View: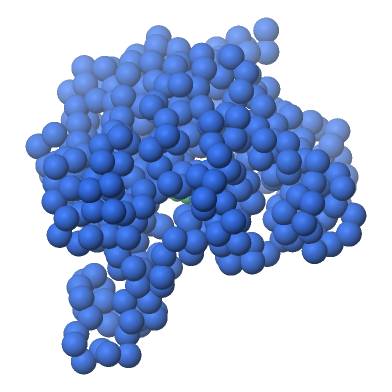
Length: 450
Ligand SMILES: *Cc1c(COP(=O)(O)O)cnc(C)c1O
């Protein structure tokens, strides 16, 4: 269990002396983290041990290359740390090979693409045909198309790095996108298979940023095999659930598994990639020198610590408690009359569909924040509003579960969220909810410190 204070005061004394402005901002952030209820699905509270590794002297060392094969002297202890991280990641997920150097989940994805795909020439983003994601006009013979990739649409729950036109991935490769079934809010594997047959992608990407249901990785493998595509699973959101046995593992099915390490997995901000042995060398080279320079060894040390924490039996209990809490929160929201994409959840997150005529996601997220509940606005499948407004909010339980919240607190939160969604502009309602949230955070804080 994480401690409540993100960093020891003593360790911050030098910072307080040297830079009171940064120090004060960090103190305020500490307070905010405990004073409001954190329901952002991609965030968590890490352990004191993870924080200490992240704040260590390892931040100073250059270590380009891999353990035992570095371009710099003085890496004997760095090598020890990175080997621990690699070995633990492989053990945790049962993978042939692990690269723990990606600076983030996005960097991990770029490295997989760089290892497995042929990029095209980048087209100017302003070109009309390009923005539509259309095929290039025949006259554009200067433009060599990159390999084709089939992935989930950002607007349907995918990630920016899954081929959005504003992301490097969408500029370098030819992405074709699948979404969810409008009626059920779920992936339609037959529809995905039809797209795969029509477009013959070199790579299929499974994984999402806002999908509340179990993903059937075996089904994705069957589709990939049928069209002779590679399969990459981006498990950024669910890595902790996979580690704890609360979501089926993609590792037996995928050629590559990319992830961030700071979401349900409860490690430092960062990324990692698992792959089959045959891809190990190409993948390592795609990370360095392909897409990165010196690795962040202080973060890699913290990843090693987090992997060890996730290997302990109590992490499985944590993963199951995240899902149980999400279910309880979904039940409470349904009882408030709210609409949930797919009608509920199997994992750590919930997408509330506010409807095209309801308040915007932006308005509800801002009102909830004022009332002490922190979440994010999120597009819902088929959303007609722009991405900075949206018709939905996304809620997740990894952080509150770390603090020890249980189904009883979820029922309370569901009631409070319902009140805010019904009256996001009513200052009296927000003040009443804020007072109730304070009682909740105080009770949890006292229990944790007891
Ligand atoms: C969060 C996320 C990422 C990227 O993570 P960063 O560390 O923010 O770059 C990639 N893919 C998916 C599906 C995600 O949810």
